[in-house]
Every structure is written in C-alpha cells, then in structure tokens.
Length: 503
Figure 1 (cartoon, rainbow, N blue to C red):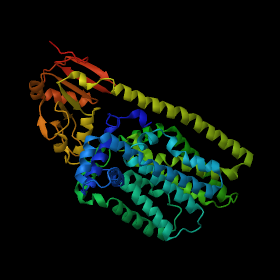
Figure 2: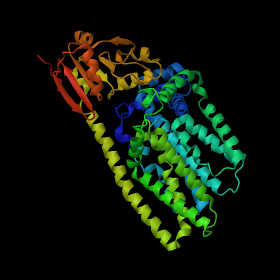
Figure 3: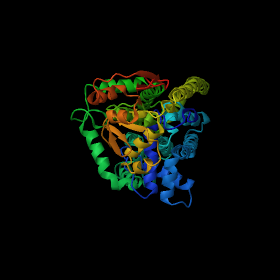
Figure 4: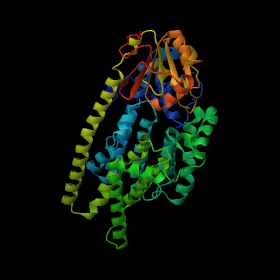
C-alpha cells in the first residue's frame, strides 16, 4: 500500500508524516519537538534515530541540509524502520495466545487484528504514531494473555502493564482507554497503586525529550478540553451532548467486524456468567481478560466521539483480533470439539473472504489517488505564481506545513533553494499557526503575486475555506479556468488548465 501511494508529500499522506520528519530533525539538532499534540514523542525519537543512522559521523547541520534537500528518501526510510517493530509485536502476541490457549487458530485470530480494518495498514505504514500504537496494543493484549495464565499477578506484571500503557499514551493520548484491559486481571494493590504509578512514570519517561515544549501541549489540550468542538474549536464546554449519540452510532456502524466481534463477545460473556452462577462452567480467567477488552474498546469509542475521526479508533481496532482469540477460548466449553472447530473454520473463512478484497480495494484506491494527484504537472504553468492552499499535493507545501509544526525553524534554509514561484495559503487557523498567504518566512497577498508573476494557479482540496479568504482580498475576481485533480481543485488566473496563457 505504501509504494502505490508515494510520494509522501501528496495531500492524503503529508499530515502528519512531514510533521514527524521535521520534528525528528529538531531532535537531531538536540532541540525538543514542538508538534506534541499527540504527543507522539516516541515516533519522533525513532525518526530522529533513523536520520542519524542514515548519516553516521555527519554533523547535525550536515544532516539537516541533506534531509531538507531530499526529504522523501529520508521519510521513506523512517517509515520502513517501524515495520520490524510491528512484526515483532505481532509475533509476541501470537506466542502469548498460543501459550494461553494451545491453539494456533486462536493465535492467528489475534494476529489478524491489523488486517481486520483497512485503517490500520493505511495509517500504520507511515512514520507517525500509528505503527507504535499497533506495537503497544499488541504488547498490552499479549501481556493480558500471559496474565490469564497467572493466578495472582504481582508487582512485576502490574509494572509491565504500566510500562506499556505509558508508552502507548506517549504515542497517542487515545490509547489511555486501553488502560481498562487489565481491570479484572490484577489484584487490588497492583491495580490501584503499582499499575497507575508505573504508567505515569513511563509516560513521562517516553515524553521526556518533549518536556521543554510542555506549554504548547498544555495550551492545545487546554483548548480541546474546554471547547465542545473538535481540536479545541466550538463553544465553551467539554462536549456537545446533542452530537455525541450520533457520533458514537456512526463510529460503531462504520466498523462492522469490530462491532460484530464486540456484540458476539458480549453474548458469550453473558452466557458464561449465567452458566457460572448455575455451577455449569468452571472458573475461567479468560473471561476477565475478555471483559477488559470489551470495556477498553467501548471506552475508546466514547473517548473519541467528540472528534470522531475514524483513525482514532486504531487502538480499539487492534483489540479485535485478541477479542476473537478470547472468544475462541470461551466458546470451547459450550459445544463439542467438532462443532467448535466448524464454527471457527466458518468465522475464519468469513474474515479472510472479507479481508482479501478489502486489501485489494484499499491498494487500488491509493493507487488511483496517486495517479489523479500526479495527473497535472504544475511545471506546465511556467513562471505563474503557484499557490498551494489547504491541503495540497506539493513537496514545498508539505515541507512548509511540516516546518510550521516545527515552529518555522527550517523555513529560512528552505527559502534558499526551493522554487521561487511557489506560495502557501493557509485558509484555516491551524494548531500551531494562523491563516495567511506565505512564502517560507514572508507574508504575501494574491494581488501582489499577480503583479509580480502576471498569472497565478491555485491548487488545494478545501475550496470551501479558500473562497471566503479570497473574497476578502479580491471580491470581484473571476477565475479564467478550473479543473479537478482527484480530491483537489485547480483554479487559474491569466492561464488555462492546459498551461496556455489567456490573451
């Protein structure tokens, strides 16, 4: 999927890949990252480590220069560096499930999690927090299966749960909902003392490189927690209660395998506890893990419903496979071995038949997006001003937007060698900067660019935010031509979409 969606500066890739590249570069220089809204610090540290390893012996200044001049190659290697970590985490998960259940089928079900929703590979193939979310969720679930085999988990296991939780939360705060996974597995002291203390300590350890930028983090999350809209927008208040139920419903309805697995597990748990009360089933610690998995997944949905972007579900989606493995175990005593085998053969066949076409469709979709985004070469517009507005497929736009999230540290350097006819029009107020038309470090206006270049080409995907901004500076402007490029629009002044000048 990654290869068909290259280059990484395309509109559907750049956020937040380029943010992590430029903030990783800050770490190479010994500076704290400044894009810490996720916080995402472990991912930025790995990016910085890869940049260093690609240039052993070079000075920080030399690395900065090479990365800025060839960002795609460096970002691609940084992305690929996450893959072995994901592979090892899935192997560990499978091994833990196999040890707990004795079943390769259950182990494979647990390991299938990244493929049961195309959101996971789509986001997990990039240099951002999602690959590490996969790692942390797999590790947390694996430890849960180890705890199933331990009658009374001690301080060490509680500390390991806390270590994983601290790491996951340092990658993305939404991971906090997964803290419910060991709720019914740990004894009281370990659950309420050792576990939370270990999680807090681990969180601060993993975000320590970013601690000098804590004011940025507190400002962003202060706005998020005191405003009802997404990303700190909207009216005062934590959440809009009128929108919450619909958002929760849409999140569940959009992920059928995830929701179907949750419902099936709830039915199994109800059946298990009813039979336990009647003395018809022996005690099974797997039910405790299953209950924690269900609670964690539901809590994730409730947590992100305020700003219900589907990829925020990835921590919970990664628990679908482990939940299926737990369901395999809990359903075993309820039927004959032959019936149990047939049931899970059917479940596996349904999952495979749903997943393989989904992988193919997602790959083809990304390839189509790439072909569409690359179908218009901006070089055809010659010396016209090329204005890239939110959000746009442009190497310069990706670098500048990434640098805005790095507090503009590298824009003066980029201005020295990047094309002189490219400009960036931010038509939204972003987390770390305000709207405006810029060229690296300087503000500009569209009339000024038309005077300088004689023609202009505007390219971006959010025309509904661009038009009001355009009306403020040139209310009577009529474009000479327009064309569609995938999810982006191109509008021209003094030139046509084919590159010919308007006479």
